[in-house]
Length: 211
Image (cartoon, rainbow, N blue to C red; front, side, top):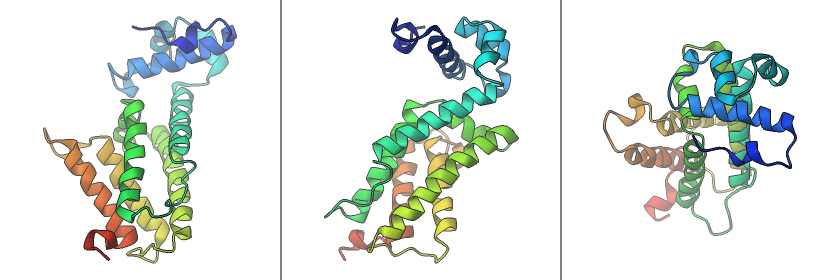
């Protein structure tokens, strides 16, 4: 396993390096097994930290997961410039493609964390709570963004419910859930459909029709 530079930088305190090692260990282990199969002992061993050291930084494995998901949210904020509105002259379809692309980039850089969380939310109440908090933040930001867009033509007056549905579809598509992307099918096809759902759901597909 390649060492994470964040854990070997001598300028960082020992505590920072141990905390980062625990987070990196969870990321690495989730490439090998499900979150349900992770134990504090396994995480500590992979991180090279004693169990007592683990509990100094985190009260459970879920606390580590919450930090990772928060980092993903911060990454999404940075990419979207905190969900800035459409740029001048940017068409709705270009904007929808760009925003779904940003989400795809965050999922890719946090693979398999986000995918594992989305797939486990139906069976693990604590993961569901973490992901619901993540989704609530995204939904609230997008609702505010669309509310500022004078060209928006949402297909429902219940904008929060509409955005929540679109967000859930996109999230499960990017997680490559087979119910959304199929089996042994190019996931790019489903991602394109997600982009069109955003376009038609919030802007009526206007620029696709040349209006």
